[in-house]
Image 1 (tube, rainbow, N blue to C red):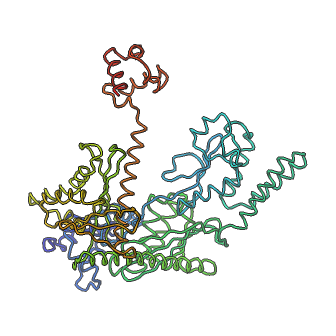
Image 2 (cartoon, rainbow, N blue to C red):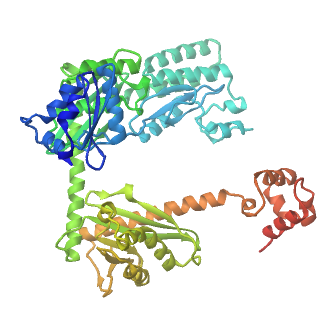
Image 3 (cartoon, helix red, strand yellow):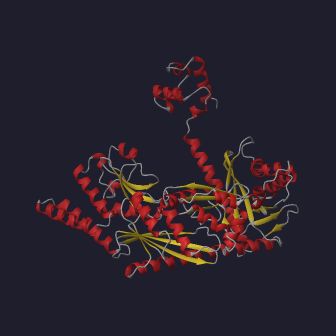
Length: 620
């Protein structure tokens, strides 16, 4: 396809303005996105004879087409480039795959504001504090805030329905504004103290509380003064246990560590002189990429993404190296933040220590990830040895069934590769059309859902390399010989180019971990591995994961079913008629206890429909 791309004719028509270019392979897949101050010069550099980079030569060999988008400025090109990278995920670009939004603490703008955790878009009116690196850090902060400031943390529906104080008030963790146990002025006072504390101004909060305590004492309001005294004591204790602090008020610090083709970027969050937390990123890095390119791609993709909102960009970002586009990035980040943002790489004193800390954490995070990966690969090798598979193993799948007395049956399929659980390939199946409680039929249903499409494509000679690559080396069936036999019968009917090895996983007599028995398909040979075997640990891991995944799906389905009204199952009863029945008769229990004549008196319910409802509710 390379020969069909005439780069000379293409370059003759390319503009010399700033812009973004997208390179496609012969399958019309975007393989690289780049920006340029001068599109013509930048694109021409790819087709020079003296291109020294192996990465660039490999890229050029695959180019079948190039699209360009002209922009007014190089800054616009940088922004568009990051949007395209996020959209297309090209394999020759550095890809930052983490796109989760950060959790925050939120104090709402209600009459009696609520303090709680928040994640996602900032649609709720109020004051947001953060970001926090983990949800665990948010819940820990909420528990601390309950001890310091008696602000409600309950949901609005619970707050509105109260007629007397709840348990949180009795424990001293809420001032019960819902039932007037505190005046609006005093409550707002506590809210303002909480906001100051979350902004890092705990000393100012203590000073204000001391003034309040002295004032209450002068007014002989000793009970109120004692409350302020206890609150001050708790705050003093928290100040002594506060996070690592320093002179830096607001900055992010980026540490980088590389090991071969792998890279880890560790981001330290410092707000109000405190390290709030950190987060590690493991970007996909093409070969022959420099450290500078990795850091520049990270800064652009992370801070210009939707995950980092306007007010959450720090005033300073400390990096391990200089960037080619630092001026342009600084301008773009400042425009998004609404204030000046500084990019720094030559730092001294405290910031140098922060940078060393970030780089040390990046090294530890990458080493930890690799040790887990090496452990998983060792387990795969041990399992291949058990089953005498010299070609090794690359993919395992395990199936399990979950139900309650045959109801809400869910089948799970979990997938492991040599890196561990491959959650993007997990699947759940809602089992239907079988006799309730028939686990054998449920297993056949799940296997058919998973593998029938692959078989049909092979039978019709339709090539699908992606589906073929996703065929497992081993399929584990959580169950005994009966379940395994059903799986054997199913696969015997399929026309597959590669039939996976089928293995049943049966629990021991006492059903204790470590006593599992493996059953080989065909011979039904029993294999018992020692409890210390790494191969057995891998089997236990994938079996437990399939069990967990099936149960979670079953519970969710059962909960959804329990929340649905029995009236929803009656044909001819829509939302309006359900509402009329419940409103007229006073609730579901009254509808169930109503006789035929009573049902006929409900507005909108005919004689025939009343009979249908009565029969449906009393068919047992």
